[in-house]
Image (cartoon, rainbow, N blue to C red; front, side, top):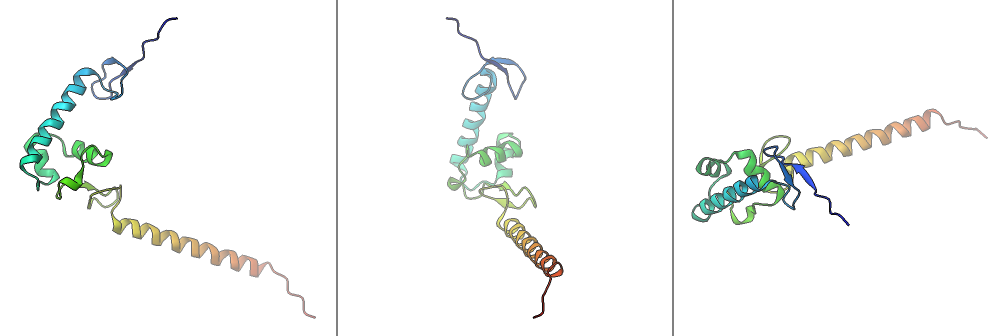
Length: 134
């Protein structure tokens, strides 16, 4: 019985590597570990740093930090000023993909649309109904 070697292309650098749990080649995995250690070291001394301050201090892109927040790799409850951005309005958020304001606006729009559709169906039923007088 022969074993197949499962390989893939690293999503970060494009090199071929043997598939693993992290889905990264060894050099990119080592770089990621180094970045996380650098970030954690800075945050241990600067608990109240913002996402932008963390980015400047560690030379990590803000989008990468926000991606780690969104994926749960960076726990924001330990650091009160770290935040991601709302996908719609770019307001700071601590969890999820959209802020409470955008969420409530979307829910209101959905409710209004459903109400309009209900009224339109009622009008169609009333317009197509036949009333018989006895």
